[in-house]
Amino acid sequence: MRYIAFLLASAMLLGGPIAAGTVEVAGRPPIKLAVFPFELEDFSAGAAYVPPDEIDREQLRLATEEARRLIAESGRYQLVDVSTVNDPTAKAGKLRDCEGCDARIAAGLGADQSMIGIVTRITRTEYAVTYRIRDARSGALIDVKQTDLRMGANVAWSRGARWLIERRLLER
Image (tube, rainbow, N blue to C red):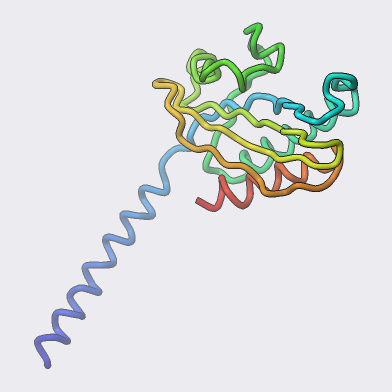
């Protein structure tokens, strides 16, 4: 019985450096992340008749700002400035359709990873928010998450972005 107690005590002592090593890993420099402006993907019945307007663009801007604020405050990421990007696909708000060109653009900015946010309008009062994160060097998808939030007009997009960043990206 004393032998078992000795083994358990030794294991606990050895566990200390392992836990300290975990803290060291968590102490790595923040990941350089290029967060591109959120984009609207409109599948609503009115999409063919009612194009995105200034209110939609403002709500996308607010969703982007909320996501960037939360990501920066986490300390796990260092935001890379994407305001100077002159790529036509990015300017048109179509990064979601370019098969990972956001990673190439992010690499050109010195980022480790790229992130695009997509607000999918299902109806005028139902939406989902998705983010996609890619490795800037390889273009490989690292993470894709989507909300299950399906209610609220465009004024709720930033709330969906906040929920997604807090509950999916930053919890892992």
